[in-house]
Amino acid sequence: MKEWFITHFPNVVQLGWTGDTGWANSIVQTLFMTFWSAIFGGILGLIFGIALVVFDDNGILPNKIIFNIVDKIVSFFRAIPFIILLAFIAPFTQFLVGTQIGTTAALVPLAFGVFPFYARQVQVALESVDSGKIEAAQSIGATNWDLIFGVYVKEARSELVRVSTVTLISLIGLTAMAGAIGAGGLGNTAISYGYNRFASDTTLVATLLVVILVIIIQLIGDFLARKLNHSIKK
Image 1 (tube, rainbow, N blue to C red):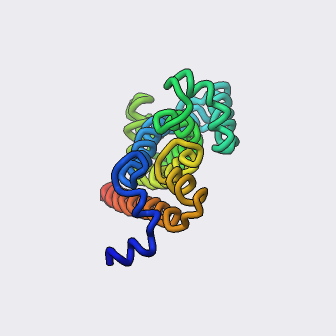
Image 2 (cartoon, rainbow, N blue to C red):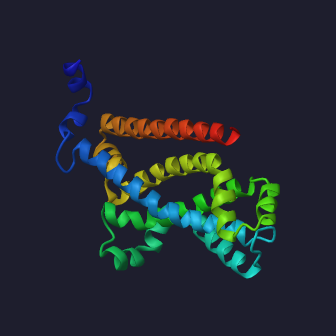
Image 3 (tube, one colour):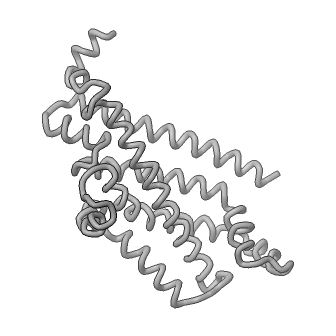
């Protein structure tokens, strides 16, 4: 088996497991970019998504001015293709982290690239909450904070897990695109050491690793969503 792999995947073997160009480093870089950009972009997306529901005409704090500002910001960033966003916010990335290249620098455009998508997903999830439950909570004197986190988020937590899973999978695709311009990770390995060098075996293995990562996230997300959905029904 080992000899067969060496024969059919010579470029994969040549890269090795360790070192700056090794597979372990590429996987770690992809996980690093996915995790931290999910945290930063997720927080931004959650804040904007909640704001889109709360300040809507049918929300608990209707405010057209704030709603329109938030809505336009989300729409603006969502309309920019990620590859252009990388260049668009490059000066801000340079100011924030001191460089425009590398995995750390990639976190800035990744967070800004994923947050509008997640904000819209959160908006849809929260709007699916039964308005009767909101009115019932209001009738017993619930505060706005209680309504947001005790009703909206609590009731929609299963759906929020589902949309978070979709967002994470989308984010992995963005990390691969960021890797193609030097941010590192499996995307960089697939392009720089695979496609550009006509090493199809390297591109194949890098792609399979990304697919495996996506499948793992999908399975975990589906499991958590089912568990939360069952707990809500109980």
